[in-house]
Length: 255
Image 1 (cartoon, rainbow, N blue to C red):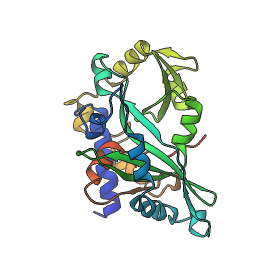
Image 2: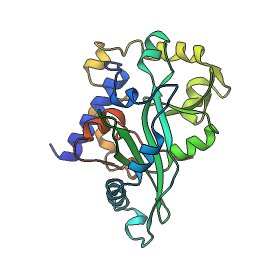
Image 3: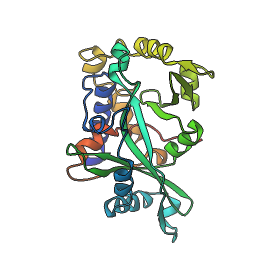
């Protein structure tokens, strides 16, 4: 099986595992608590490292990219955007925080091309660049969140702003899920419990390896979609990259 398709298939399966809530404890979650949050200084350092620059350079050279022909310099911004994914414990029991730290995003540009580098800690707590994606989804959603916690529900491609005990939709997918008006986290918990009650570990959904509402074979057909281009880091961070940032099978969206 070609390496790219293997990576896509592996990532898709991991998305299915994530959404089946088979495993909830990750190194990323362990480094951030509702009190302390992630180490954003370390995340920023990782986003500006030589390793990150190399990954961004590869992403900028993707087929059909305007950046591939551009002589503009790569520019990595100073912004660090923590992204939280819907928590398995919250879905199952309503306990704990609604989201678990997934990764930290830092926008970058090369000419008119917009890119995003994802950073996450390894099991020892050291931060690394783990992925690069085209587009500036996280920056766009963070701006719309206006300082609130940025939460994503990966299966739907939905993005939310969390403020205290309320949740606000930030994109059309989120509006379709919860409506245009802010809702209480308790109401959201009931929604996601209903949405995923048949996708728990051991369910048919989990056993079939279904990812994001699509079967694995179907998801691999998106690999050549320009908006879905993603570069994976090599080395010891790969396992964390796939476990914490399994975005390779979804199409990137910008507002």
